[in-house]
Amino acid sequence: MKLPQGQGQGPLFASPDCEQARKALRSRPRAMVPKVMTAAEAVTRFVADGDYLASGGFGGDRIATAPLHEIVRQKKQGLSLAGHTATHDFQILCAGNQTGRGKLLAKVDIAYVIGLEARGLSPHGRRVMESGEVEACEWTNYTLALRFKAAADGVPFTIARTMLGTDTFMHSAAKAIRCPFTGQVVAALPALWPDVAVIHVHEADPLGNCRIRGTSVADYDLARAAKKVIVTCERLIPEDEIRRDPTHTVIPFFCVDAVCEVPFGSYPGNMPYEYFSDEEHLKQWLDAERDPAGHLRFLEHYVFGARDFAEYLERCGGLRRLQELRRQEVFP
Amino acid sequence: MSSFTPIELMICAAAGLLEDGSTVVVGTGAPCAAAMLAQRTTTQRMTLFFEAGGVGPQLPRMPISVGDSRTFYRAVMATSMADIMATCQRGVIDYTFLGGAQIDRYGNLNSTLIGGTYEKPKVRLPGSGGANDLGSLCWRIMVMTQHDPRRFVEKVDFITTPGYLTGPGAREAAGLPEGTGPYKVITDLAVLGYDDETKRMQVESLHPGVTLADVQAKTGFELLAREPLSTTLPPTAEQLEILRTEVDPHRYVLGRA
Image (tube, rainbow over the protein chains, first blue to last red):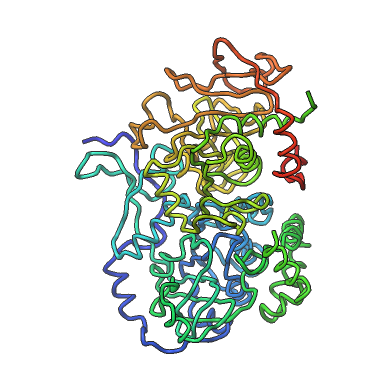
């Protein structure tokens, strides 16, 4: 039967081969051992130039800011990114493009980039994406989430009834197929196994068993799909506490390669039940991007020249500011 | 009758279109204000969904991100993005609100790029986010936007999110769920809908003091008009009071226009 439309013409940035993925996952250490380390060490050990990276949370909500800064500071090069509502996380990674530090981002699967939702568009994100130096492929929030889900399920593709008939579809790497049972047209979506994911959670034990409160966005599947996972947590908790109530474990230890305790680790993003986003700092960041020279000075102060995430927090107002954001979260 | 601004009229008109007992996926900004206003007036039993996973929140104030913690404040469930989208795909979500830089006569939306080529666009915009999914899978798509010929164009530069695509039957032929599609467009000049036969955008009611010629002059394609054309009901005093004091006291949306 003829299909009513063309096929997605976009590039596939990661192989959907489930046999390859099984072999990679088979060789990953999964002994039940502690894996606590700093974000800097985790990024040095688990993020390689040319890797396909995925960032957990929702752009500016429950994001793993510390390893993202560290990826920029360590000048990782030629990364691919899964941009599912990539807002502030994308803004951080873009600091490694067109700032005299080579080219951090080389390829982006785009569901949503550049924008910071109601806050506006990132001028530097636009400069990077309009320059043509980053190869792009279009997707949607649901289809990227489903690509992680297919990978988490260990199958080469999954299907959905979205994207069909649009330019988004034509610039994606999806294919229209007919359902073998009903003949209906559906979009086939290739599984996506990122090389590495960075995910911020509320609590983790030293082995990497994680608890997330509030919305999980796509992190249940992302943690299972990624070949390496760096977890940052608000608080380290004992293994006993995990075992006392295993219903709350969202990510199990065998999906985690590094556990980094980073209090306020989603700052300047929101962390549900902990602290709200720092809208003043995010506005300052957006404003700084208007002028490339001013943007460089801004990045030098807050990212390139900060020793670590704790120093970044101090430069952003430290405990006083964090206490205010905690108040905004708890008493909205 | 009290005085009101164009954005207040748009929010109240949108709120009036929502049904009690229904389900709606909303974003930030004016659509969220419309849904919050509706819940406080005519649709107490309507459930709000947010694409990052919030279900049935009692919003304490307007969210700034469709994933921030206010989207599941005192909610009935905090789930995943895929669960929300799957709920749309199962046919359980009645309404969604979408936006875009451009819209055409069939309600196709562009939020991806303006001008240039795909590889090197003149202006790169965020892309679909969840818009394509919601616009593909929810029953009725609503759009709130300023009426401007640069937005209402003959041909969008990129179809990010499907409207009726090329016309009657095109959504179903492409594989999208039957009976879904664009429903209303609420602008600062009029409320528009779509002709059942042709699926083309048509003016349904004009805001007080606006003529059909005014609307056509600000639209880059030929509009149809429903007969008879009505006048959009102005906001009630109760709607304005609740909108100003409860929904958006900090004037995040009301102050922008």
